[in-house]
Image 1 (cartoon, helix red, strand yellow):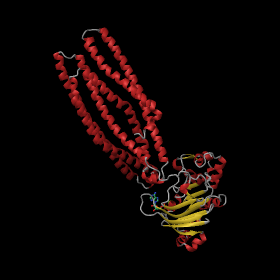
Image 2 (tube, protein in one colour; image 1 turned 180 degrees about the vertical axis):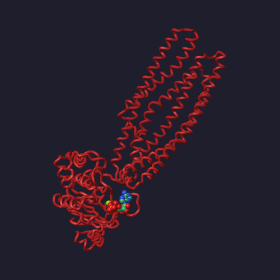
Image 3 (cartoon, rainbow, N blue to C red; image 1 turned 120 degrees about the vertical axis):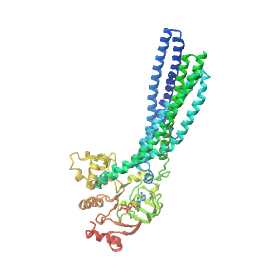
Image 4 (cartoon, rainbow, N blue to C red; image 1 turned 90 degrees about the vertical axis):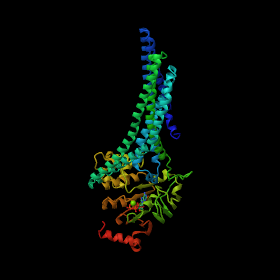
Amino acid sequence: MTKLLPYMKKYKIYALLAPIFVILEVLGDIILPYLMSLIVDVGVKNRNTQYIIKTGIIMIIATMLSMLSGIISAHFSARAGHGFASEIRKETFKKIQGFSFANLNDFTVSSLVTRLTNDCNIIGQVTMMSLRLAIRAPFMMLFALVMASGINSSLAKVFFVSIPFTTIVIVLVILKARPLFLKLQTKVDEVNSVIRENLTAIKVVKSFNRQEHEEMKFKKRNDSLRNTALEALSLIISIMPVLNLVIFSTIIAILWFGGQQIVAGSMEGGELIAFITYVTQILIMLMLMSMFFMQFLRGIISVERILEVWGTKSQITEIKNPVKELNDGSISFNNVRFSYPGCHGETLKDINFDIKSGEILGIIGSTGSSKTTLVQLIPRLYDVTEGSVVVDGTDVRDYDIRLLRDQVAFVLQKNTLFSGTIRENMLWGDAEASDEKIIKVLKQAQAWEFVSKYDDTLDHVVEQGGSNFSGGQKQRLTIARALMKDPKIIILDDSTSAVDTATNAKIQRTFKDELADITTIIIAQRISSIQYADRIIVMHEGEIESFGDHETLLDISPIYREIYESQEKGLVG
Ligand SMILES: Nc1ncnc2c1ncn2[C@@H]1O[C@H](COP(=O)(O)OP(=O)(O)OP(=O)(O)O)[C@@H](O)[C@H]1O
Ligand SMILES: [Mg+2]
């Protein structure tokens, strides 16, 4: 909790004012039964109309003031609660942005979404309730107890039985509810994860005719969420009859003992009415407190889930005085070994090679031969397990991480565009770029050829994930976006797989001639995409099988020769 409190700072004033108005509200509520008893015992008994009207007017004013305070406190507590939640949401979002790729494997995306939405909302609601209910109930109970004891201290002994009894019931239920609420939150995560997976892959689902299967999967999780919610709810509801029983037994006891006192002449009728009202107030507040505790419990679980995100340390950390200069795109891998965090076995074994700045390096190898894993180490999406990756003479771990990622542009194998316009997507790479630069870069990536055909060219809309473009168009746009950064090194991970051979050849030529000072790493399945690279690495099961140019590899690498021959014969394409 202490970790979260600083985020209330902006809303401190509301958080302080809300309870003050709550107390004013309580004072109004408390004075009413007392005034009522005066009307009965003094006004009615003495047939004093004047007195009744006067006290009645005071009651109306007290009610109005109490109502007004209630409205103000509700408003302030809502501001404080939701403001607090929004600050926490902002901070959590920021923390997630700082996650490394490895961290992202630790949390599922849907769980992060639930934490950002559901859990933050619950924290906001609980804060709101804490500022109102958690103040109102104890004060109300205390004042009502004082007033009731003031009216008749012997009758107030009834509380010694009813309050402890109710408290025990509530504590028992809360103890039982805790694991249920935890389970509830996990179930929400699970439903969200099915929804997310299904919606992002809805086209695949449809093309495989898997709708029914998906519906079943969803139904199962949804039912399970419903059952857990019902279980939690029935537990909460089970308190109600018990509390009602307590309330009515207490009232009967008071009527019984109070009635005897009235008969004996030691108590007035109006006093008894007021007494019963106070008792009801106390027990209702106890009931509300139990509701609050339930919600508070959910709040604690949500806080824990948020703190879990906050407490996750990014595996990729920066050194104290990072190098802030990167002038050329030379790369060397020295005895690099790598295993994915939490996975057994090495994904990369003893990788050694050097390339000069401006060279074009091709990487080829069967799927799963660790091509992507290898290049991910250059912009530090992961850190090496052993050995070092050096760019421009400096270990990548010693660079300022923003600088490194600006200078090493990585077109991911499964890249995506963001909804907006083409221009907006291009500005990701360089926020200040002119249209001329964007067009120049689009031309280099062979994307201008289709972008220029749209009436609205750069303002053409990009739908979510770039779904309104063909695979090859999307790839060319993502290459252009990477080029916008004016990087020293560009990595194309299978980024032209969907582009036709002629266009692909044009892109290769641009990298060779126009962009000759950029170090280019091209991962490809087709030999034709890397044939003209200065040098080519052949990967095999996490190791470099051979390293050399096209002609050399045809001589020395059986794997390369096999790929070449199969593609020449048109078997693969
Ligand atoms: N995030 C990850 N966590 C654990 N293991 C991973 C992860 N990503 C990849 N791997 C494993 O590492 C190995 C190499 O994968 P990698 O993606 O580097 O292959 P690749 O050569 O790029 O294949 P492709 O040509 O299909 O893209 C595979 O066995 C894969 O299962
Ligand atoms: Mg790959």
